[in-house]
Amino acid sequence: MKEQEKLLRFQTKLQYIFNDISLLKLALTHKSYAYDMNVQNSNKKYNERIEFLGDAILEHIISDMLYNCKPVLSEGEMTKKRASIVCETSLSSAMKRIEGQDYIYLGKCETTNNGKMKDAILADAFEAVLGAIYLDGGYELARDIVLRLLDKEIKLTLQGKNYNIDYKTSLQEKLQKHGTVKIEYLLIDEIGPEHDKTFKVELKFNGKKIGEGIGKSKKQAEQNAAKYAYETYKY
Image (cartoon, rainbow, N blue to C red):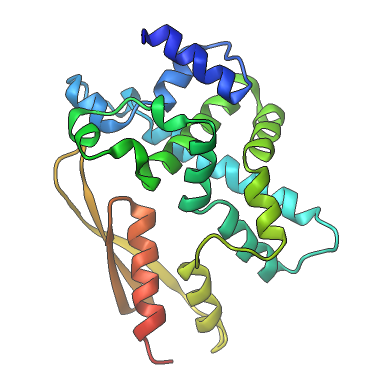
C-alpha cells in the first residue's frame, strides 16, 4: 500500500480529514522507524514530542468530562476513573478497534517482534494521533473524536469496570492516609539503543526509596515501581 493511500485510509478510520496530513504521518511514526531511516538524531521525525502533547490534552478532555458527570463524582473517584480511561490497555484497545496497528510505521526490530500489537506502542500512537488532531483542527474537534473513540472505555469505567489496577493512584491513596506525602518517580537509567529502550525508574516516598520498576516505556516503569511498593512497603 502506498504511503498516501495508507494515510488516507486511516483518516477514514478516524473519521477526520487532516488539513496537514504530514501531522498524521508524524503521529504514526515510531522511533524505531526513524532509526531505520537514519533520522534518529532528530526527535522531530518521530512521534514522542507530539505524543507528549496528546497525553496532556487527553488528560484534560477526560478530566473535563468526568467533572461534568451526573451524579457528581468526588475528586478521588474522578482520579481513579480518569486513570482507568487513559490507561495503556484502554488506549490500546481503542486503537485496535480502528485497526490502528496496521498503520503505524515501525522499524525492522519492532516489526519482527510484533511491535504493532504491543499495548505501549499502540497507546503512545493513540496519544500522538490526538496531538496531531489538536494541532490540525483544534481542541473541540480533538475532544469530540476522543469521546467517540473511547466511548466504550468511558461507559465501562463509569459502570465501575476498570481495565486494570492503577498502582500509582492506589499507592498514593494508601500513603496519603498517613498525612502529607511527597511521591517522586525518578528516571535513573535508559538501557538499549534509541529505538528499543528499556527504562528504569526509582520511586521515593518523602525522600526515601521504596521501590524500583523497569518497562519498555516510562509510564510502564512507573507503574511497575508503584506496584512493587504497593505490595511490599510496610506503612
